Amino acid sequence: MYNSQYKEANDVLNYWFGGGDRSKRPKWFGGGEEAAKEIRDKFGPLVEKARNDELKHWENDPKATFALIILQDQFLRSLFKGSPTAFSRDTYCEELAKKFIQRGTHDHLKFSAAARLFIYLPLEHSENRETQAINVQLFAQLEKD
Image (cartoon, rainbow, N blue to C red; front, side):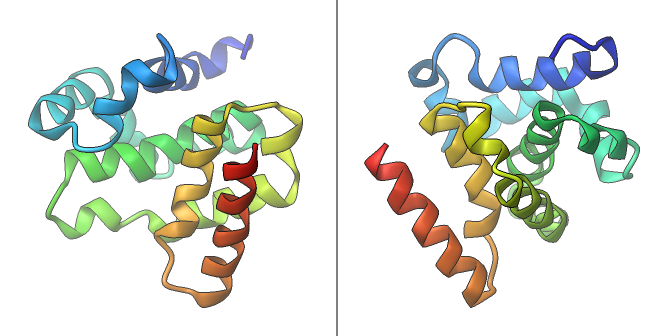
């Protein structure tokens, strides 16, 4: 992303994936309070902007859309663990992920397998059977790649 209006989106992606996928895994799953504090300190105001739909313009850029998914799917789960707020943007993230996938954006941008995992996770969080079936296919393809 070279556009300065998406600098914060780039910061989110660099934080989540920078330094190699393996080095970030502890933050991704089970990062606990330490990871939550770090996310809150670095991105708390940005998470709130996303929750208040103040970053809708990010949907105009594929990588910024991906950052929006990370902010509202993963960061919310970390910051509000054990609270309904953690899941409050699931439907929105599912819609974003579906649009992303329908457009083939995850393929033509050549995202790593780890990145695609986080594009697909909002579908896994869905309770809709059709969405789950799509997710199973995507994860099966991911496993082959």
